[in-house]
Length: 459
Image (cartoon, rainbow, N blue to C red; front, side, top):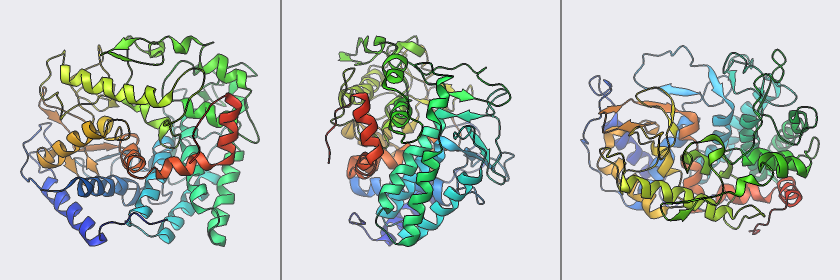
């Protein structure tokens, strides 16, 4: 690979350096206030894409927790280090991060050998970390590998977060297959982690649905069966694909689809939603991360089953968000063709699940539009240009800050791993299809898709 290095590394670093230094928040800028751009750089589209991929990749490279190599749950640039949770690492965000590191290799930000060392560190850490019937918890202590409770009863296995990690690791394994001995050993180590996940255990004794959590202390008290459309499709695909602890197809067809109720779609902004977003929402459409997390590796283009055309599903999801923000029924300042996209992120009220309708607080989350590049390339590019040429105070060391609101004159120079991770990965899928092509080549994944009745176009 490595055929995509169209620009010199010096140029990439120079562009990123100028942006970083020009956008570093001053003490005044961190006072919950959005500020006007002070630097207007003239970059072409390819340079903009290179720059944002470099910056967001760095969250998972230079910003990683040192002992584990995993992604920090959050990095706050406005707080004096060390943060009291600086060693808390996230499973899902790290799964996105291992894919972002592949982007770094292909774009020439780091070497293949440097990436190998980091992957060895991560895989070794995961192999010795707390697991609960093969699933890791949502959070781990990067120093010890011990569980850090995500909530009072959420101190055991998190199958959804584990699925995001496995999605990333299987993609990495495909990249290094056929490499030197050290690389092939990494592949074997990843396969062991994959084979040890007891997906079938999470059917709670044989029910035809997967449960999100299990704890040795609280057992199934979290009681979260995962059904109805959301971000978790990849969990069901991997559970069916497992060569060691697979689920039966009925678990997908009865549990995930709620006995087919998932197909009850609606028309919103003149576009079919394709699937039913109402299961966990009062509004017609969900936050945009639903169109990203499962599709970092799982290629929706050409993918279908008896319930949906997943290309239409994800594309319409992004287009509906765009049309909603252009229409701007809430009258929020800034919303329009260059500022759009709602998803779960920070807000003036803490972490919130932004999406069109009742959950719209006037907050734009940059990851929403930027991670939608494969679905809405022109609209996503308009937003990217806005950030980097008109509002560079909203961009820092690791790329765009997590969220902002012009209506509330609010932003904080803070990052979340789960929001930064999809950006470089989905942009790369838009540019080259790299991560999609790798993940979809995996033999176990292909078997799982076939088992569940999916049709897809092999590359």
